[in-house]
Image (tube, rainbow, N blue to C red; front, side):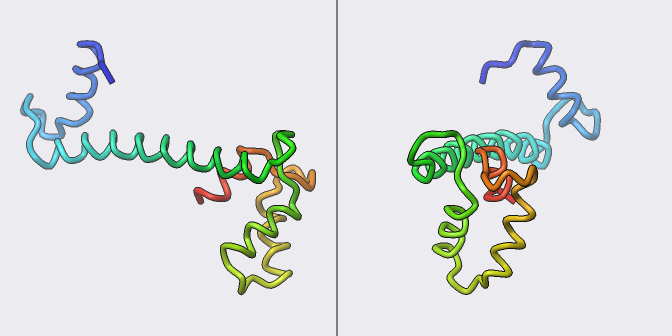
Length: 110
């Protein structure tokens, strides 16, 4: 990450809550947390993409809701068929019977 001088000024204005022109420790922590979250989001997306690829065996760009049920059972074997149907109804937004990566990622990342 190499911000321009203008981007640095914008960041400072955003983070410097008391307008002192300096970043105090609390403000620094807020700034650092932004970058940590972004990295974590990227790492999470990468991990989810890899998991999705494993389940999308035919590389069609989606997984079936039946495959999703298998995944969910592996994660929590106490889920009932009714629970599974409820989850699928919630995440299969377009009712296609399949989940594309975006739907999968939304479900897995909450």
